[in-house]
Image (cartoon, rainbow, N blue to C red; front, side):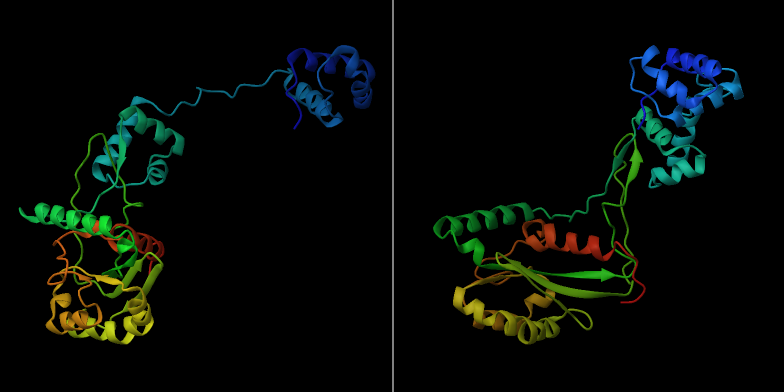
Amino acid sequence: MAARLLLDDKINIIKTYYSTKNYHEVHRCWPSFSDAPKPTVANIRNVVTKFEATGSVENVTPPGRPVSANTPRMQTAVAESLAKSPQKSTRRLSTELGTSHCTVLRALQQLKYRPFRPRLLHGLLEDDPYQRVEFCEQYQGMVDEDESFQDRIIWSDEANFKLNGHINRHNCVYWDAVNPNIVIEREVNSPGVMAWAGIWSEGVIGPFFFDATCDGQSYLAMLNDQFWPLMGHIVEEQHLWYMHDGAPAHWSKQVRSWLDEKFTGRWIGRGGEIAWPPRSPDLTPPDFFLWGVIKDRVYSRKSRTV
């Protein structure tokens, strides 16, 4: 890229050109009147052409007021638009207001607006925190006794994937000066599919899918027909533990009998060797990591069929 020419250099180009009438001669004589890097013949021609068209070698300032769209009026327009639709993207704002994206971002900065992303939380009952602490203390005690304990747990969970798409917190932003504490409602009866997956120190197991809803019978069929043929020999060789939460399908008598047989004294859950505290998704890798990653990928593109 050629260096920007100084005003004196441009004047000398014009003087030399009109005394020689030759662009190449100006290029040859350049060291005699400037120490700057020599411009190309095309650069010299452009300077002369501009001088002949405008009568000046200075940069021409466009007529009219200088463009400075981030005005109080623009900030008011941004605030009013977001008051009606706080989830609107900055790109859409710039299109609707007929201004640049940078102007919208500057206006938001002047308004002290920040993007707030919703966090999905489980409501807790009065005794839930104590049961969670009790579980964590018991778990930590077993790790202290056997460091390999945490590497031998299969953490499992089910998740629904709906056609309407559960909320994607990365793409869902609310602009406001203070936290709006938005409450998000879900459509319960949207078509979808339920998947089971497990995760342990050696990787991910599954996912396995249910043909309909997950009840005691279908959950037991999944354990027998899909999970055990894949993991049975590893479970027995490494004395693995199995964890699931207190969902009604997991509390089935047939499921508990199966776990007592396959994971004798080595399963975590309601009625198991270690009781699982209710409403504790943030304690399991599937909930605080696995399903979030998978759903972000699944919902990155709109699906039309289950």
